[in-house]
Image 1 (cartoon, protein in one colour):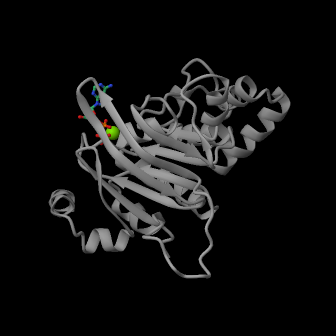
Image 2: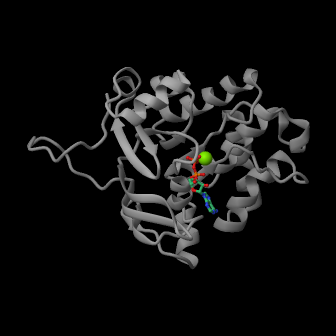
Image 3: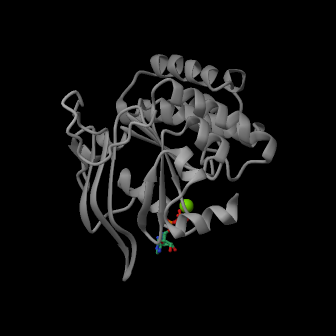
Length: 259
Ligand code: ADP
Ligand code: MG
């Protein structure tokens, strides 16, 4: 079922298309420390990539470089064939193509749930208020928190807040969604309600990069596992192969500690 790009194929029936996310030769330094070492990663539209690896391996840094929250020292990143510029108006527009959901939900505490979701589309995309609100209510229903629209974030559970954060990202109509440990800060009983929303998104065809150690989710929703260690991609395979038959010693070591 995995559709990740392997070595060039000679299959004459194989369709070539522009990857939705294309990371090529990316190096990222923090001072002298190299956090990303020549990362190459092409992700076709609709693919769900599980990004996994030890703490400090560069997973968050890779996510942050993909929407230019971090600058890179070399290489290119393109979304839907368009290279991400380093800065400027064009960057803001392209960045809107990449939705991001973090471990900490980062909702605006003094704005209602509805306002949290309408803010981006109104400010960045110039969507009219009535239209933004209608879409926000539809998205809040979709993630199961429609009844909470007029409350403040603090009145919601962690699981509900994270679902609002997903709705807020979706409101920008992103082409790809990045999730950086979206359930790590949640109480255990709230993990499933967030993963369920992500599974639904995956089924609906959203292209996703998900940093998670949730093996159940990785195996059921993931098309592909990218394993990182020390700033490098060490393994890139389908979830079943990764979890049952990892080839690199570093992946074997990592899995022996978490499984
Ligand atoms: P992961 O998400 O896999 O745990 P990170 O991408 O957060 O890893 O970090 C990768 C490496 O880069 C770590 O060694 C971390 O200490 C370092 N790093 C991350 N952000 C910064 C920063 N802003 N300044 C300096 N070093 C950083
Ligand atoms: Mg991280």
